[in-house]
Amino acid sequence: MFNESMVKRGTERSVIRELFEYGNARKAELGEEAVCDFSIGNPSVPPPPEFAAALREVTERGEHGYSSAAGLPEVRAAVAEYFRTAFGIPMSASLVYMTCGAAASLVILFSAALREGDEVLVPAPYFPEYAVFLEQAGAKLVPVPTKDFRLDLSALRAAVTDRTRAVLINSPNNPTGVVYTAEELRGLARLLEEEDRKKADPILLISDEPYREIVYGAPSVCPMTVYPDTVVLYSFSKSLSLAGERIGYIAVSPACKDAATLFDAVCGAGRYHGYICAPVTFQRAAAACLGRSADVSVYRANRDLLMGALSDMGYSFAPAEGAFYLFMKALEEDDEAFSERAKSLGLLLVPSKSFGCRGYVRVSYCVPREVIERSLPLFRALMAAYRA
Ligand code: PLP
Image: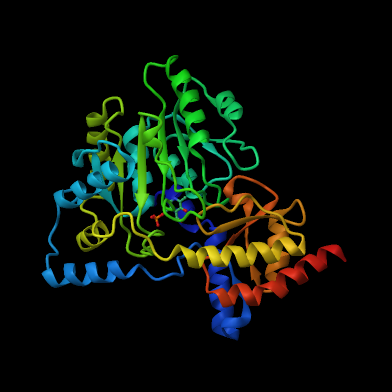
């Protein structure tokens, strides 16, 4: 009677959400201290003070009417100006589309750029929703192994076929915390340019960047500076701690082949999915805070505390260079069994299976520091249980 595939999508369990709901139920029943919840990537640091000031001012103006479908002209111009000053990219406001966060950006861009049967190479592990968003566009997610969680150019080259239409990268990465260097991205660009010479249309580089500002070493490199056919998908969810407000944008590189036509397709896909006129109050307030971020030093302190203590206990992980995730090696091959064992001690860790990789768990350390302090004896007990 209804769309069976949507019923399936609506009822299948998301491991992250399920752990998160379990944690909330335990806390409601037994009190806050019943679990140490490292399941979900909900920013724990408040938005920067400039955001509250901007929001107050915007709200006082009382302008809540529709904007044009792609967003307010002055907001699109501000984003374009940001690309010019921050990255030296001659971005035009006419190539910026305001969206309801990175999820909407992904859905819109996949519909706009991909055709039935197109293949998209995705370094694994990856954000699980990519699979759902690509499926709605009729495209195929092709997982590509990484080398110590960094881009493996040989594996990427081996995965290219006649149907390859795009490579989707996410740096800083969820779930690993790895941040790609300029050298890595230049290597990827060279590979794509070589492959492009064999194709009628260039391979698109899609860069999903909700964690752009959350880095603990060198700043994130904008892939548009190394490869022309690039589209950046951005969200203010993590940088400004606005995950619940649903605001972000799509920026098509002016150097992209047929950039204006691709942007027309973005507008068409936005219309098709009903993602027009992103929330105007948040368009304005976020635009006033471009390039700013919540206090990243809090996440860095969490990371240092957790990583230092867990290393001392004998755990190992991917290089945690950005975002707010530690990708920790499970103490047995079966990450789901390991996660269950941790859960029985009150530690909520996401098994890596849903990220397209086995044998790890993701630890979201965007939590109050006291949760990390309270969790350390539990991690110690977990290690002891496996050593016994
Ligand atoms: N992409 C990645 C890699 C993410 O981690 C997330 C959210 O956690 C999203 C996209 C979706 O972000 P948004 O909240 O802006 O829709």
